[in-house]
Image 1 (cartoon, rainbow, N blue to C red):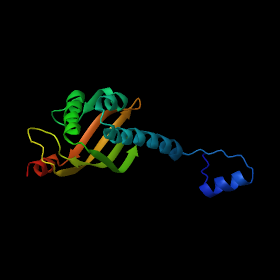
Image 2: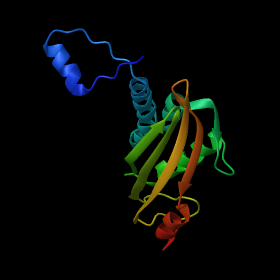
Image 3: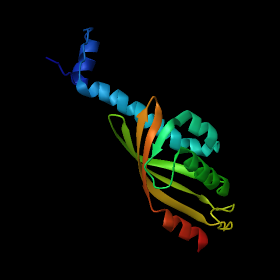
Image 4: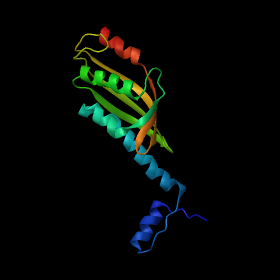
Length: 161
């Protein structure tokens, strides 16, 4: 039988010099969940470095599957490289993350000033942003599957307005 120990019990036992044997189904999950969330957060935050080829090598599995119509690993990299090039101050902010097993759901926002051509839209100097929710599955410490939900049309309309 597993014995669950509260934080108070752990601290009290440690202060009293007692040995602790902590076994909990949630302990392993918490470590795993933190690790997978860190991988996904690291990927999105790496956009600030503006070297997406290095980011892809570090965070995106070579056999990654994109569950976004019309995209595979290479076309996703090419598209996002054009996006980064068109916004000198592009930033991604991670708002929320939830993880379960090997999947991480992330709500984030991308924004910046449009300073270069992007999808045949000339530089407007306008600030544009969009919020997205993504789910990423981790395997071998890299993103192996990616799902995304974002209102990219509204983002493009802000640039072309």
